[in-house]
Length: 428
Image 1 (tube, rainbow, N blue to C red):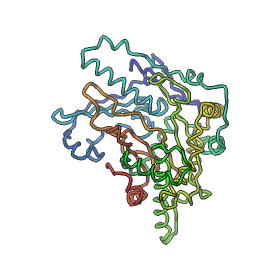
Image 2: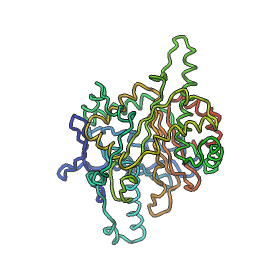
Image 3: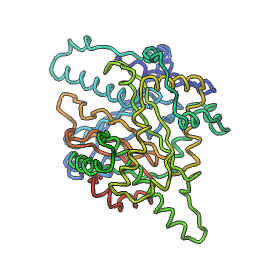
């Protein structure tokens, strides 16, 4: 906490949508830190492939969103350290809400903790005070915005600027109430999650096949391919469930989408665009772009040709993330404090709307506490439906791990999707 005082602050809302973290030395928001023991042995976890069902009960002391504890406080960091049976291993659970950090900052907190522990293990405590400090001042990130501006795309602008009674109410209520509502929605979804591995061999194979259906020299990163592939896979699964439900007596299609389009929020890390030095700024500068994809395209059976079409269709979304664009987005959000609740309110009309975190999450296995790389790292199982995250694989040189969350009946169809299951391996 000496290095990250912002995590001892309180979340404060203005009632207009502005949210800030206030640090008051006379009113410290102490972190939740719990140490525990378990009858589960490391060998049992390892034999189960570290699957969630094998974890000790209660490892995750928070849910996927910021919710107040029994004392009415939203903690800005929750830590649960569980020592496994016979001292065979340790599980470290760390949760920091997005009010305070993005994925890179979250990982830097854990990396710094690990670095300090390494120094202590190696008897180098004297060097701890020499570790570099961080900036938490968002205005320093804003100061890096260029003078040039590129307009925000019309779809993203419309979703962030079109208000409704629901969006304004969500902005007006307190962060504590908003967190309770968000947690209740996630709990009601009863989303089912799986981890898949997309190997380097699968990537090279698909990339090679796609070359015949895309313009020469077209960029095909792992993120581009998986953005198209996962959203198509989920769309087809939603359609399969909807078709089955439409055969019932009441002919109710709970997955019916408005205007026959699928809204997808593609979330980008913008440190590179703003030229923020690595491991220097702690905060959240993620930026979502909203794209509306025709359902007819997304629900089309995945083939190399149809996948190439969808990849090309995302070009405008993923290729135009420049510093002038980021600057325009930040100015748009700052000028309308309540606009951050508007995408959520609008997405509520689309039960199949999706979120895709485009940039590979920082290498979570880099958190070395003095005893080498962790045996396994994973998000918690509880998550909102229709979300996809790309994670560094345990073998960081062999592809990526894909965290996917959706409704239970939809996930059943995902696991039966021939194309998807032919290019990934289900971890658990």
